[in-house]
Length: 58
Image 1: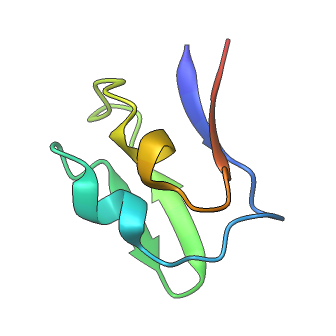
Image 2: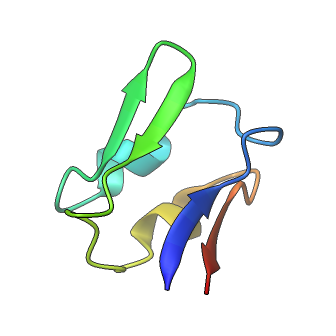
């Protein structure tokens, strides 16, 4: 499983990167990068996203 950002939905507010305990989300310019090597699948980013732009994929 992995976390994926629906880029066409994401507003790049940065809320997800603020709640990530491992700093696995990097907001650079208007692009959100997920560092899969750091992600522990806590799903905090999914819970905080106001637009439901982050999801778990198989």
